[in-house]
Image (cartoon, rainbow, N blue to C red; front, side, top):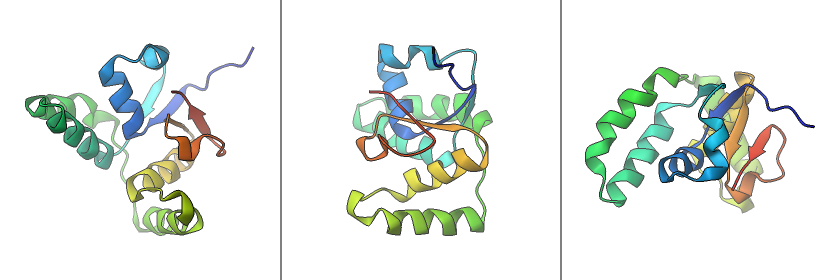
Length: 126
């Protein structure tokens, strides 16, 4: 039986699925260490506004801000290189930054984004 890592980088896809109550993400709510960055919270807030729940954005930032990990110039350069390397997949800069931060911080990149399905260091959940 495969043991689950204890540290995950929640990309925006994962945050949205958790917010929707996707049962496949239930096991990622407890007993693990979460990291993300404020850009994921920005995208998640946009999702909330799109769903007519913009008033929840402030509370969401407050709840998840403690999991924020910052990025530096070197992380941004690596993310730009990743976006270029996977040009045909049309990865977003936010996803590339998140993927780089996951590796840098010893976390699995948690997502259901098809572009990441077969990538190294990814926990793919639909």
